[in-house]
Image (tube, rainbow, N blue to C red; front, top):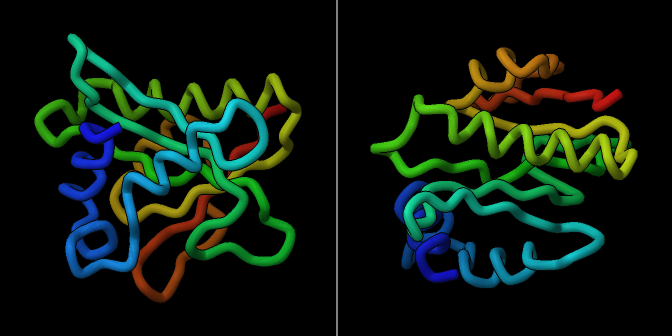
Length: 138
């Protein structure tokens, strides 16, 4: 899990870096469950972790009634714009369909285009510049 943790630290140093409140290894450990929330997916290319995403019960920007969230979507910078993020989001969407999860949500500042292209609906903007999106897996 250390390569995935390093990817998270590199991309979100304010949260996972040495002075941030997050713990990448602990979050990844929690996302290693086989059932329930949270759970996660890794993208691996030639034995190298190149991306990750997770499904959790809460996220930044959540309001009452929104209890399933795509979180932690990240792709190694040099490999962005090659479809890896879309494949990670697709994995979450497919599991949502298979498990009958109902609506899932995501908060993003930089991946709005990806979510829109995949058919997610923009439902609100937050004061900090993040957008909240919803996907209905039906």
